[in-house]
Image (cartoon, rainbow, N blue to C red; front, side, top):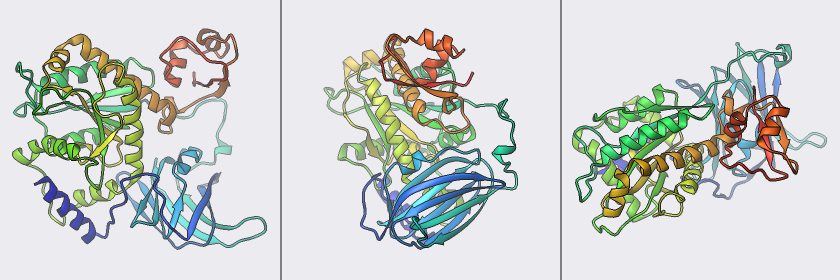
Length: 442
C-alpha cells in the first residue's frame, strides 16, 4: 500500500508541475553552465546576490508563502555541493538550500525572515568579470545595516528549537519485546530524558510532540513540529525483527526516491502502517497541503541537513550501543516528511532482542542514549545553527594557544565556561593548540 501511495504521489507531483529532485546530494550532472561563486551584499532596502557563472543561463524565479520563500531555477546548471553554506548570513535570509531537479537543472531556495520581492537579470562578460546572474531581494521593512547603531544588539537572539517525537502511543503500542516491553513506553521515557538534556544546554530548547500515552497520526506529529517552529525533528523508535539476534542502533533520513536497502523498505512499511490502519490525510489532487509537501520534499537541501544531523548523532550513539548500520540510511518514513525541517528517525535498539530489551527498560541506559543524542545535536548546531539564534552568533573567532584553558579564555573575554562549551559543542576538558573557538555573544 505504501509503495502504491508513493507512486500516486509521484503522479500527483507530475500533474502539479512539480518535478521530484534527486535524493542524493552532491551528485554531479552534465550541464552547460557552472556556478563558480556566490556573493552577497547589503544595500539600502534590498539584498543583492551575484552568481558568477561559466556561461550564460536561462533562469526563472517564483515566490511562496507560509513560510516566505523565493525559489530560483537555473536550467542546465551545476554548483559545487555546499557552496550555499559559505554565503554570509543576513537578517533577511534565514537559510539557503539547493538541489538538483529534472536531472540537470539547479534549484536554489531562499528561506526568508520576512516577505521580499525578487528582481533578477543576467550580465555578460565585462572587464575581469565573466557572466553573472544578479538577484536582488527587495524588502519594504529592510533597513540599511549602516544606519543601525553597532553599540547594542537590536534584536534578541533566540534558541534553536528541537522537536522530539516519541514514536507510537495510545492504541498504537508499536513493537513488543519478548518480556512484554512496549515500544511506545520506551520511546516516551527516552524522549523526556532527551528533553531535559537539551534544555540544560544554553541556546537550545526542546519541544515534546507527545508528553503522555496518546495516539497521534503521523501528519499530526509533523504539524506539531511546524507549529513549534522547530529547527530540527528527532523521531525515536525501537526496532523489531523476526530474528531475536538482530541488534544495534540505526539512524534514518528521508529518501525522496525511496529506501536505500530492502531492510529500510520493510522498516518504512512497519513504521507507516499505523496511519494506514487508523486513517490518513486525503490525497485528493486539489489538496493544497499535499502539493506543498511534495514541492518541499523535492528539495535536497533539507535532506542533506538531515544526513548531517544523523552523522553527528550516530557518531555519539556508537559509544552507548552497538551500531546496526554504520552510516545514516535513507527511507520513506512518513514522519520524516516535515517540510523545511531537517528530520531524522532513530531506531534506538532492537526491542525484539532480549538483551537490548532489558537495556531499553533501564533508566540508566535511557539516560545514556539521551545524552548521546543531545551531544550530536549540539555538535551539529555549533556548525550550522540558523541565523538569528544564539548558537549562530559570535563576537569573534579565537585560535587556541598552548597553555590555554576554557577557564582562562572565558575570563579573558568576559564570558562563562558553560557558554563556551555550548557555543562550540565541547564535551571534554582539554583543548588543542590551533583549535578554533567561537567566542559567544554575552
